Structures are given as C-alpha cells and as structure tokens.
Image 1 (cartoon, rainbow, N blue to C red):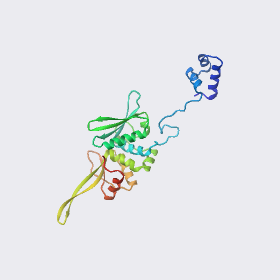
Image 2: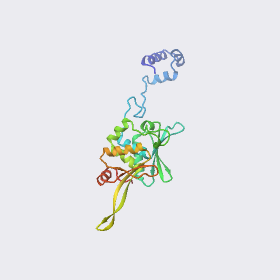
Image 3: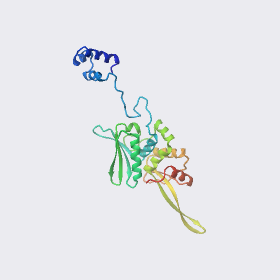
Image 4: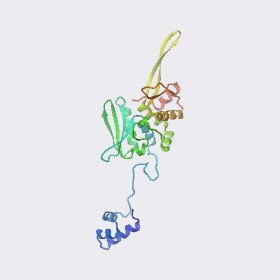
Length: 257
C-alpha cells in the first residue's frame, strides 16, 4: 500500500509528460497502479461482506435468523469445501414431508447471507437447502473434519450471546432438524377399567452429547422441564412431556409443517 505522498509524486511525474513505463521504472510502482490512480487517487475501501471478517468482528445483522439457522446446522446441517474456488457449501437436509420447514430454512439462510443465492437440491425423500460462500466457516466455526458427534462442539462467545438473546429461535432450529412433536398415549385404570389417554410430547435426538447439552442448557434457560429418554442406536434422546412445558413449547415452536 502506497501512501498519499507516493501516489501524488507518481502522478506528478506523469503530468510532466513522462510515460507510465518510465515512471514505473523510476518509482518501482506498477503501471497498473499508476493508471488506476489517474482515475481515483484514494484507495477503494475493502468490503469483506462478512461480519466476522471485519477489523472489528460483529454478529450477523439478522440475529433471529442466525439463531434459527445455527440450530438447523447443528441438527441436520453440514459444511463442505467446494472445488473451483466456490468456497464452502452449507447444506441443511429437510424432509419432503415438511414444506414449511424447507421454506423457513431457505429464508433464514438468505437472511444470514443476503448476497449469496440459496438453491434447493432434491434428493431421495428430502431437499438439501444449499448456499455457497467462502465465509460460511466464519459464521459456523464448529465446522471441522469428520462428523459433528465425533468432535467437540462448543459455541464461541459471540454465538452464545445470540443464543442467550434468542433462545426460542435456537430451540426451534434444533427441534425442526433433529426433534419432533408427537402425540403419545398410555393406559391407566379408571373406576376399575383401563382407559387410554393421549398427550403431546416433544423429543430431541442427537448423537452428539455436546449438542444435546446445548439444547438442554437452553431449555433450562427458558424454563422448560425435560428428562433423558431411552437411547436409540447410540443417539441421545431428551423428552419434554410435562403439560406446562409442552404448552410453552407449543407457544414458541409447535409441530413441523
């Protein structure tokens, strides 16, 4: 980077009738740079288009959308490097059965990176909501080699602040990816007869104990009671079944659609 004095000196030599080539040889400054200064002497400020790459890193502009997308990424998302200088692909798998989830995921991805396109890639039984950017790893530093449940998952301090500010958006992303709301049933004796009764229940399942802990810590923060449930194929399960906690979850999350 040349200071203002060096730029003005080079332009003064050109103004004397000197060729760009001779001025370049005398000053050691490339002809391209001198030619560009003839149009604009002040350097063009560099815009990274990434809030985490700025001189003073900041959170994404839409923190609500980011908290939701973070939950989706930790559940059913992945980051992979792409060839031919395309940077990284962020992919979130969304089942065909939930078109509302596909739309919400696409909107959140676009809100977090407005300058990048979001496309839908149809796979068997699901849609991969996909966006390409060199800066996805800046926004999701949990990215790394191997599967998420085989490595440590911790939120950076700036991510944790977003989750603390928008816990329900984060929980909605987790439940929409690796969770569900179901109607459970049981029987109990009433007046000497066994009768069936039904009740709603939320589940969250993930193979990463770190991600499970992020979910349960956030549930604790919003006052939702939960308990561990039976493990399935090595995955960790948690259940929300108490009536008041389910009502709270219904008010802020609800079933997938």
